[in-house]
Length: 102
Image: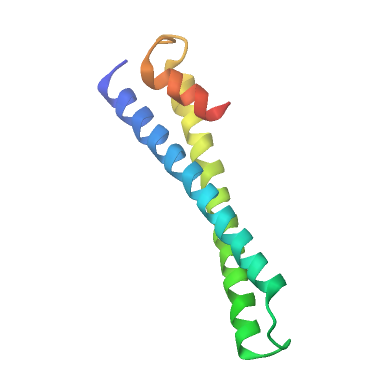
């Protein structure tokens, strides 16, 4: 594998790994925000309730954005992998990329 292919593959593997981790974090954050809203004892329409709803909506929007970016980087990783997987099936980066896409 030439250095440029290796660099591209390493960058894409790192990005997909990071974004998968971020998706998990934001899913947890969204769940916590939903739990706070459902268990809140504030009066509907109060400032506190609006604030909790805003936090939940922000977590939801952020999660959707991260999922979209993850899918974009998975496409880039598939493209980078397509160039090298048949030539270097035992390469560490190729194996890691396949694991991330599975």
